Amino acid sequence: MIHINTYNGQLYHDLIGQKHNCQVIIRSVPPRMGARGSQLIKTIMEFMGVEYFSAKIVGSKTKNRYTIVQALFDAFNNYTPPEEFAYKRGKRFVFVGKDRRYPREVHPFYPRGPNHQPMRYKKL
View 1: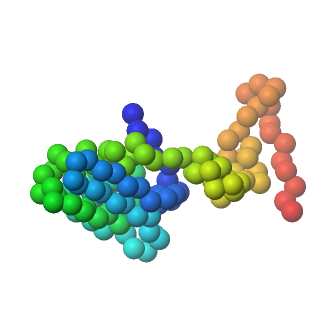
View 2: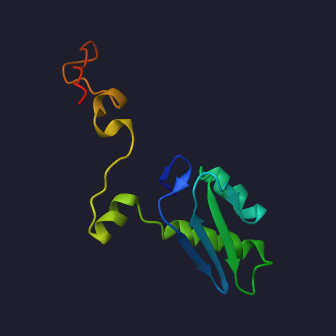
């Protein structure tokens, strides 16, 4: 099973995959851009949950659909999670969203059982 982390339908970084002489380049784009690329890649990326991307197929074997799909899945296999990607760059990964300051409101954890009410954090 392949898992791709997305943020609101966007990729965290670009993906590159290659099979024989076919190369697939998938770029992360802003939400206003939408999905751009061949219909085959759009269908697979939509199934994976990625809504905003730009795809390009490079090489002489671009007519062969099987080679394109294999190159696309090679790009998925070369995908690194955002935490590991930030670690390689020497940066700190910070979650963007509501769960950054108030994690228990989004992901409740009750240490004293299911009937225990979580304590509310003071807003800064």
